[in-house]
Amino acid sequence: MAPHRPPPTASPPPLTAVPLLLHEPLYVGIDVGKASHVAGFVSTTLLARHERFEACPTLLFANSREGFRALAERRRT
Image (cartoon, rainbow, N blue to C red; front, side, top):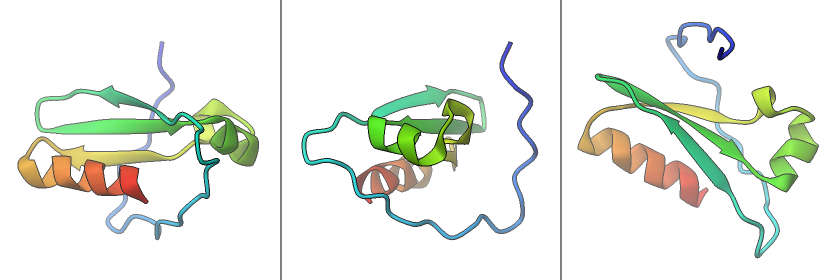
């Protein structure tokens, strides 16, 4: 059973880039919903920085072209 997620806040915290190793894989898991989706990002560096899987970064994005663009942009940063 997945842990309960709090509802999204009105203004998300500012994003900060986490430097990854040049050839380090970044794993992205997506929880697909009807109106919105949640993406979770995991890598060796992220796990070391956040110390546990549940604390690794996530992104709530809309089920739309703009939402997909937000996911693609987040992946690039």
